[in-house]
Image (tube, rainbow, N blue to C red):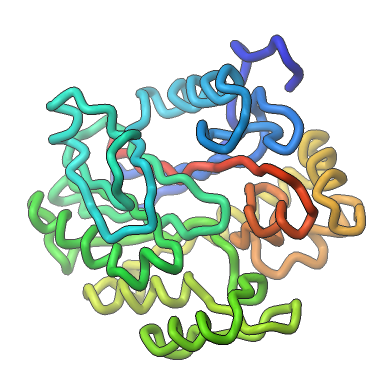
Length: 300
């Protein structure tokens, strides 16, 4: 969307159901007011984008969600906060350093930024408790999943009722980290070391998150897959003009969008799927900047 169209910014999102009465949405790069490296729907205000464009994109998302979002300043920690208490205090949660937030309040969306790190969304619909956590490599190693679940339990959730959904993130085939980091990560999360498509040592943070969730008793059918809905949405957007433009700007040999999607193995991988922002893809393309998408959860 060109400059001057800020008031018309309406993010293209993918809606999913995590549990009865609990909705998850993943924002895409489509439908916003940003331009250049941030095109089109950057929601991150700390990545160099025009603040007016970010504000327009965020306002559009609030319109889609029916309420302003509660956000946190993500710092790769294991800190989980009570979003309800912060709201009651009138605190601007975006300036609170944390990597997970929990709520028992209906109609208050919780958002987690992504551009390769993994967002995990949680719900105990019987208790009315929802949560969202930012699970990058360091956050996973520091125990952010455990901290998030413990905060949910403190608000009345029960471990055996919690369901979770993993959002878009960089996959193990694309996340190259080097031998030392891969070995250290694999020692904590066995079997998560990989060999990437670039030939070096990598890690699978989604697999590590599943191990962390299993340690909390959340596994099997209580981990709800986002893949079918995201795959369908990606296929539906195959002819989208904005997505075709973004694909051409991603500096991956300039394949046509249909060709790129045709060889895509993992629709949730932020590097492979042009729907998502990716720090690693931007780096590989020698770009100076990239945007941020949001994974959002709300109880109706």
